[in-house]
Image (cartoon, one colour):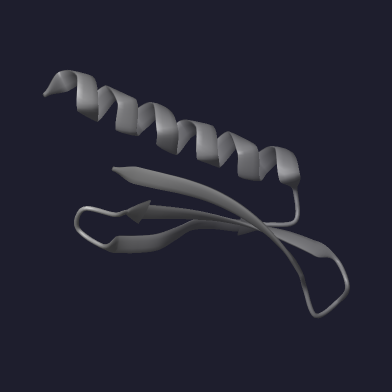
Amino acid sequence: MVKLIIEPKKAKDGQIEYIVTYHDVKTDNLFTVTTTNDMNEAVQRLRETLESEVKTLTAK
């Protein structure tokens, strides 16, 4: 099972950063997809990663 997470954090300059993380629970593979100040960009990257995972699952 794969988990995709968007986590808002306050940056040193006071702005909000959105960290998109990919976590494959089965293999314990964890990495950051992107870190951005733009929430729309974070959501788009999350969506792209999710769509890619769905394609991989349906191809099997």
